Image (tube, rainbow, N blue to C red):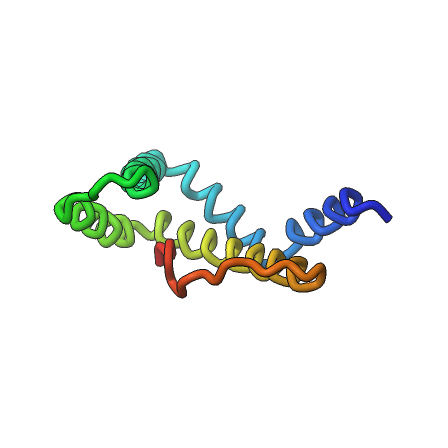
Length: 121
């Protein structure tokens, strides 16, 4: 059987998982609440700008990091955003575990990830 066929089956299985269903429900709530959606989009934009600066070798000012940290704390008070970020984190963890399983089965070493890095909970 071709890997692409198995990948489609895996995708269907993921869509049936509780992690995906929780993410989908949380996303729907975000989409229904404009303030939460804007809040999340703003946070993601600022998060990406900082990461892009780091990746390009720029020195990131402590003030910018603190600003993002405070924004993360603030958005966690919004129950829709908090629920979405937790559901997204759980879904991403499941996908990462699948990736690790596949890599190990074919003998590919993946770089170790720091615990909690990129975690938004």
